[in-house]
Length: 153
Image 1 (tube, rainbow, N blue to C red):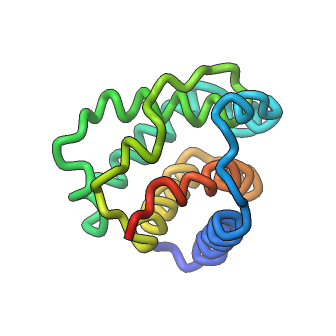
Image 2 (spheres, rainbow, N blue to C red):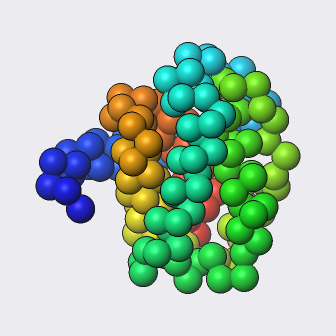
């Protein structure tokens, strides 16, 4: 990892840890759909979100810390649902049609270390696509509540 990126990664992880620890309940998907469209615009819209998700998946699948968690996963469906989710959360007008996070991750026995590795991989993908650290943190803050539904050990 580029040493200049470490503060950004640490800032993102701090946001996730702080929000995950202080939010009492994850924001319902319906409420998240009301997000301010400025984040969608700042992310670069649907084309950049799609490319970022593709890069994110490639990074995760190459990451020895977490690639095993995707064994047997339908990667095309995963890609489509991540695009929907990021688009919806950022106010892009998409509707997330995937299953609830708790249900999807049930039985995977994911740890905080797994979650943090995933966040690092997402940040690398966003960096690759020219998304500013400020914009990254805005998206990460919306994703942070999902930590409760995905980490089970």
